View 1 (cartoon, rainbow, N blue to C red):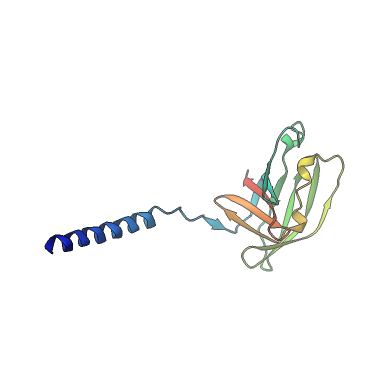
View 2 (tube, rainbow, N blue to C red; view 1 turned 180 degrees about the vertical axis):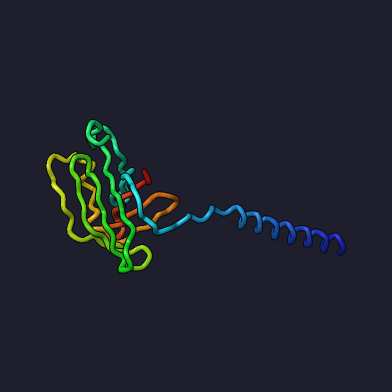
Length: 154
């Protein structure tokens, strides 16, 4: 009888320790923030679940290194700021508005659409609905989250 109790206690203690270890070893929480002020460049897109990265085939490396860039100014007390950047071969600029953490919209943009490579086709920043900075990557979601533009700081 004493042996059965001893075994039960050992099993119980072992289960508690294992449970604590698995809880402590769970995946670290993503670091999420919302301060997008500064300079960024597009590193990939998610288009309906497919990750698309920059290649020599879908952009022009000899112009602006084939990069799409964005500079976000600080927002004012109304949550409004300016955005300016380059879409590989054309400059653009306009206004953006942040409402609550994560909601974003863009006003009219001044830009040209002369001779852009395929890499710019998915740069639909005007359609943005929300954003977050997850582990230092700015993610801008549009098309009800089916599409994402991913940026890194430059």
